[in-house]
Structures are given as C-alpha cells and as structure tokens.
Image: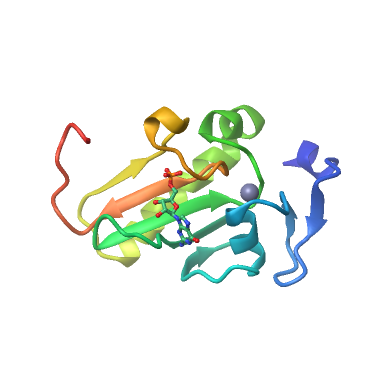
Length: 134
Ligand code: 5GP
Ligand code: ZN
C-alpha cells in the first residue's frame, strides 16, 4: 500500500478518517465516503462491503477496495494484498451470515456484465446456485 500513499488521488476520507483514493464521479467511491447511502455490512481501512441494491440471492453483497480502480485485473496489478483482502472479507461476511456455501464473482468488462467500473466482488449465497451461470 506504500506506493499508493504517494498517489495524488489519495486523500483522507472526511467522514471516516481513513485514507482512500477516490474518483469523485464514481458511484461506489460515493458509497465509500457516505455521500450515497448503502447498507454497509463490513468496513475496515481497505475494504467496504454493502448490500447490492438489486439482490440476486438472499445474500448479495458487493465488496470493494477503498481505492478507485476499474476492475479486478487492475486491482491485482496494483495490490495483490488488497485483492486478497476482498476474499478475506467475503469469508468473514459469509460466516456472519451463516452461509454454508457461497459464490464470489468479478464481472470484468461490459461483455461480462460489468456496469460499475470500480472493482467489486459479488458475494452471493443463501440459495442454491446453478452452474454454469447465465
Ligand atoms: P456489475 O454489473 O458491475 O458487476 O455490478 C454492479 C452492481 O452494482 C449491480 O449488481 C447493481 O445492482 C449494483 N448497484 C448499482 N447501483 C447501485 C447503488 O446505487 N447501490 C447499491 N447498493 N448497489 C448498486
Ligand atoms: Zn470508484
């Protein structure tokens, strides 16, 4: 994370006090700052998780880095550690929700269904999940 602290994007989040690198025009960045309301289910310095507004399963949580990057591939390039933190957060949230099985998904690119270009992991659970997905 050290290299990120040098980035001009980095600023202190006024509401929560931690350091974040945001895009003022991004929907998920506005959720991080609290400017757009969401039901936050997990939060630490590096990761925020909130309920999806259009849930596709009884548990449908979006887990995002407090860093504006376009997709999971960019995130992995910038910080493997932060990428791994999303998976750790998913495991914790699954445990909190007593999920015995769950699915984590990153949609990358419009063709794959990505509609918000701030990297996010979907955590889906609470029902049987078919394979292959649609
Ligand atoms: P994507 O299609 O990019 O993989 O996922 C974007 C997700 O963001 C969708 O599942 C969509 O329902 C969710 N979403 C879009 N706008 C909002 C919002 O304003 N609040 C919340 N909580 N979720 C949103
Ligand atoms: Zn963003």
